[in-house]
Length: 314
Ligand code: PZK
Image 1 (cartoon, rainbow, N blue to C red):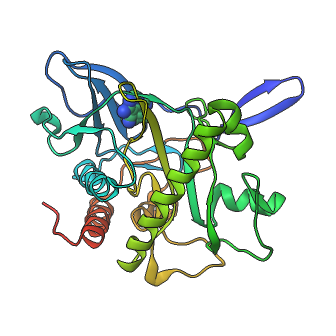
Image 2: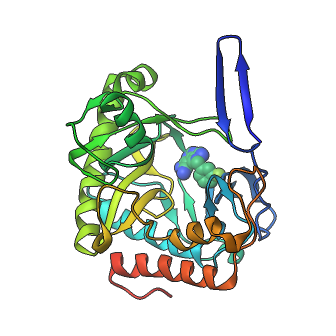
């Protein structure tokens, strides 16, 4: 089944399936916390002091679906990774983390964060070509208005990382890649220039460090906001996790065909195998994952954390 948005002159495929209801969180918070928003894999609350509580759930998505199975510890691993990156990036810019003292129900997988005035731009840096960047390149030779050399293939390392902003789509739709000029019209030239600089600076640092530790960060998405107090630009959301980035095992990097995903390859391989009984073009929701896929996937999140940080998880 496809959901179509129709107007007289345009017909656009929004997604291959109707927007999925996000599963209710698998935890309860104490009184005084109010739910603000849930995405596929994370939940946002306002706490009793008017600050935000950012919760990384154990939910996992694949092929645009939230799967009916959770991955134990995924939220804790991604939160720990985000906090570790925030510590390493503090000399580039401030971040929204205020405290890790959170309700016991979400201990380890939530952050108390500063409420920001968010920029309505997904700030993406790409050091390697794949996904929507590859599609745009094949169609136009450019990505988000940045011309690239001829002859690049799926997985190619780019001559230098590029800033490829996107605008947020409606629920169920994909973000739309836009050029730099488009975001200057949304946020102004000065802020657009600064968001590009920060995005590329943070990516360059992270990509180099991760590559030394066996993980290619092919691309990554940042969200920035402005401090309501000081007006400075602040790094928000979760950062440089497998959910906000494409992580590839460096020792298997081989441009010219799709690269295996560091974290989700077992999930994708099983879902698309005959064993799952699922047809991803059917519009049907995917089935529950078998225990072995859950365990191997959990092990990949732990491995990403341990390789990057050099410390044992737990
Ligand atoms: C904010 N999101 C995305 C995050 C979701 C959705 N520090 C902040 N201040 C104000 N707003 C946000 C943030 C942050 N981070 C982030 N939407 C608003 C988001 C978590 C779960 F469902």
